[in-house]
Structure formats: C-alpha cells, structure tokens
Length: 80
Image (cartoon, rainbow, N blue to C red; front, side, top):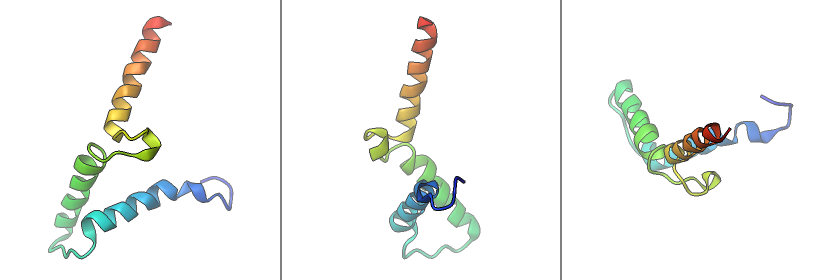
C-alpha cells in the first residue's frame, strides 16, 4: 500500500471483483464451496486471463501481453 488517500492501490482488484461478480456469480447459488472455487478458477484462468481483452493492455489479453513482453525481452537480450 502506498500513502493514505491513494485510491489507485485497490482499483485493479476492485475492478476484477466487479467483473467476476457481474459476469459469473450474480444470481447463482453454489451447492458447495468447491463449486464456487471451480467457478472462480475457470473465470480467472480461462476467461479473464486468456480471452478477455483489457483496455490498459492495448486491447490484449494478459496472457498475450506477457508472451509479447517476454519475446521482446529475449530479443533485447540478444541485441545487447
């Protein structure tokens, strides 16, 4: 956490929970805690990280962004 009054610290987490609740959880009843965990895992790993495009990542998914970043790092190391 940074200094008091800096509202940007929690913004990414709050945005994720907002998306998660509205896209997957709202109106659902889960029979077990394990069913809820499976839904959270599926949403995070399959939908949110691999398919969903993010504005702050220039409309790329987090996985695509990381792959491009790692490729750029490898290219930069070869040049140096």
